Image (cartoon, rainbow, N blue to C red; front, side, top):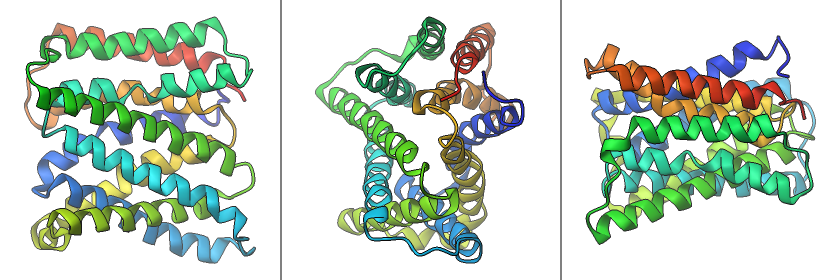
Length: 285
């Protein structure tokens, strides 16, 4: 089971990534700008911590994993955010949160022990996401098919990012791994923004408080905490909390954005929490 001292971190990470979509909605910035600034600001903050707290110098081989993870993280953000313009948020989110399932499959293929309750929990939590967005899942055009493909590839990229994170955290501190990964991802995202002509700097005057919040809350409070937990638990266990993200976001949207929340959302939330709890029940690596 999850150690008692880590339980608050799982809750913190779940709530932190759940609020990301709300911050993007209120920021007034483009999705690419939000992605770049949350990565870049977070990497700068962690750089200050790692430069003081980490004394050893990384060997060139040690940098390979975070560089690949940075590319995967950037690919995840870019493809997922582009899919949001091709399909509904509901469809895109439902497809992209498949990455805990990808990771569990990899663990099975690697011969790692995966209990029945973890598999059942994953299925229940994903069923909650499908239930939540059941009215919005119809696909009507090839553009939407492309959006679904983008979201699916984005889920694979996220799986790769967290899989590498688990391997890297066995020998690297959280700050040094996350700093290198986030900074690499921010540079790749910046290059993408230049390629499509989206000036990420033009959003600073009006949107900087929300961009800062994106770096502090979902990036440091969400992704960085998850990267820390990868030192102690399987990738599928840590990422299972992402299955609660769409439900948490829906509840927060009802409170912050005054979007309607009904019985369906409440049932989905209960299912998601139950499913994640089952995964975490047998989660020690």
